[in-house]
Image (cartoon, rainbow, N blue to C red; front, side):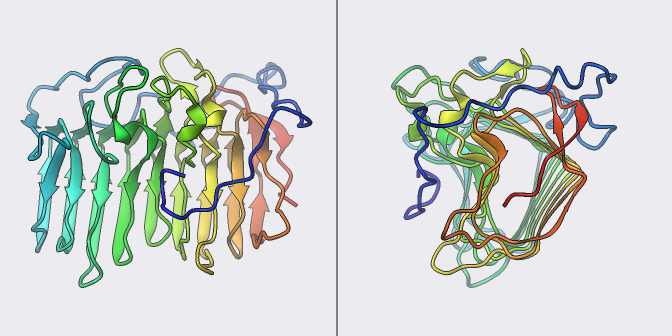
Length: 346
């Protein structure tokens, strides 16, 4: 797995002897009025992110620089890295177009607010869009709000590491809040499992066109690998495998995304205080692949199309249990819910 060294890969799934992909639920929703926000529970496509961005295609070479934004170029042209080393007190980064990935350094302790900005790692970028490397000598609060994270595409065989990794990662002494954030062209939204809040945000358009084998990406949309919690996901639209401009599937999307929501223990860790509510979960190999977590809570969510199933079974070494599973229903590819219930995973 590219996202975390030492992570245990999900079981390899092949087409031979496996069930057919889950059908799109559009037919069962036909009798209902289309409501792709689930009654306002989650945002419409292209309604969150940095002000001034508008609609864009996955293949667009660059996003336009909105009026009033400053452009920050990389500190290191070889790696395409923009460095933030000193975070004492509060650092506010507002209305900035980063033509780089952001590196948050080892001694960055304090509060970092990234607002109304665009993070666009260019071709040649050596790491994820926001690489958090703060050490445990102090606490870091990272707030990312009303921001678009969208690595620039590259051609077959070319390099941009931000395309195939989670956009953001956590740290042992971090508190992370992601609010109104648009994440596209990445391997996932967040590799984070402790003190994380994701709200009113959108994940879409996993970019795999540069990979001869899309399974090389092998990530999860939101992945608390080895996380202890708490993790809260609410009022968000998580559909990594959709081409948002056309509303159709990205070809082969499921080969790169193990699950939209993926939990896995590491080194004996146990995930607690995990809540997912009022969100749209769609277009991963699975919707939910929970292999770790005590007392997981999922309620009032809509599960859209997936390749293998809305949820996975709990394997022999799986430790996931559920404190709440209520009003989780099937939805169509646009986000419209149906009346069909999604059973609690067994």
